Length: 151
Image 1 (cartoon, rainbow, N blue to C red):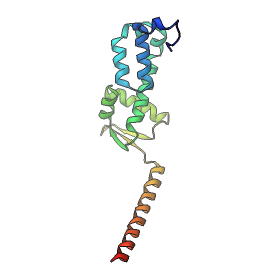
Image 2: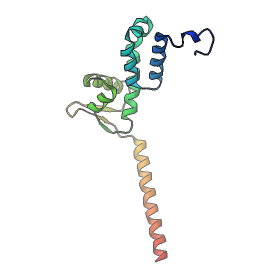
Image 3: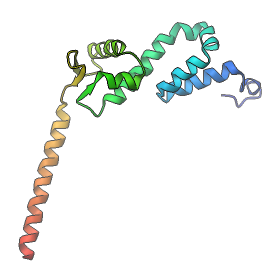
Image 4: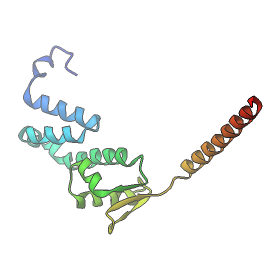
């Protein structure tokens, strides 16, 4: 965005730099970098009325993206682990999870006693694992057949 002659003088301006760093962290779903930029440049970022108005939405959005990426490989995951990854308190993790479950972005439920997120088994995964098991058995049969012919 700073290729034009008119914009080049503003390229290293601290306020512009803070905003570009904030945008970069947001686009790359780097929540720790996003929060670091917010802390370091809170005066310039919070001084912008437009950003200040939408900051809560931006934080929720980046947390949601990171949360979905973190829970993807799991069927059960501790809320404390999610809280550590998102760098937020446990109660905020629960609130975020509840909103995502109610909105249909996550298929599962929160076990508050065990402090776990339990994700529903996906039918597609079951099909995939059944197909892999069948393939594995066929390979074992083929191996046994070849072995018997050699012996």
